[in-house]
Image 1: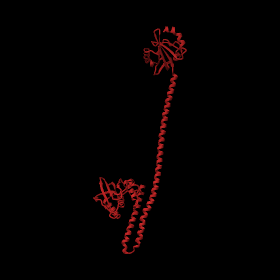
Image 2: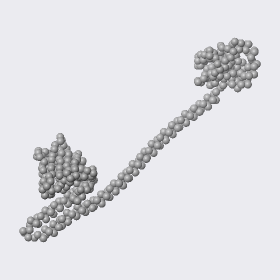
Image 3: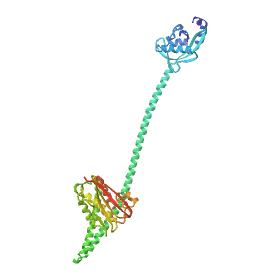
Length: 407
């Protein structure tokens, strides 16, 4: 050390003092053999105060053990390199303050003695700037994340708003469509009522006029013929009015059902008896077999309405000399009643509309009818847990089947 100081001292001081970085030179025993003014000032020591001291003096105590291993490894594999590459290193000032440093190591030989020159820089300012940048970036990332969430939330709100507007738009379109359909139904209804009421009223007026002309006793048979026509037309008008009242009750939710226990044969007998008065020439109704013991718990008036509608339709849309079969089947706790005719049938393309209100198939437009009977039947059955289905083939006939719980 003494030899180095004597022969190199002046040259070292001249060169080292011109450099802003701290320079510390240690021998292979990690003893400090030289330091420049920048290094002394950096670590808080006076000139020459570090000479002969161990390098550990300038290293925080927590890093002593690691530093010894690193230094020995560096001596074994000497070469110019950056100290602590890939990790933070720290220096220790005389006053105990620890600060971040960056050091470049340069090994060299003088008089067969190994030395290491460390070029040390205080990077406190740089580290503070890095920390500030890191904190700024973290803050920025948090703000971006927050804004992203807010943006995502806004997008979701906008999507919900779009959905709501579309729903509102669809509702408006649906309301307009329903309004158009309602206007069409009103027009159709007025035309229908006008036609359906006008025809029987004209018949009644004609029969009344003709009956008034038959004043003689021997003309009683002719009077009775016209009186039956009047009765038939009045009953037809009464049925139409009953259908319209049923629609109004169903739509307003005022439809009520009075359930009672009664023999099925009672209702079927009454319906078929009344239907016989409407039969065309050669038509007949086959009465269902083995129903005398069947008892149901149902609304008697509604069941009568349902069967009357279906049997009267079978008569109306079937030709002369045809047969209408009424059959009854028990299916567990349910009852099934079918009415089969040999009539004109329903065109396949129109079958899906058959239960729509006021709908009448093309091949039935010339026959009297309101197009509301099947709609009423279906509505009543659905209200009491029943169903109505049908099969039909044009020009061959139709079979309508109603099914409902016995109790």
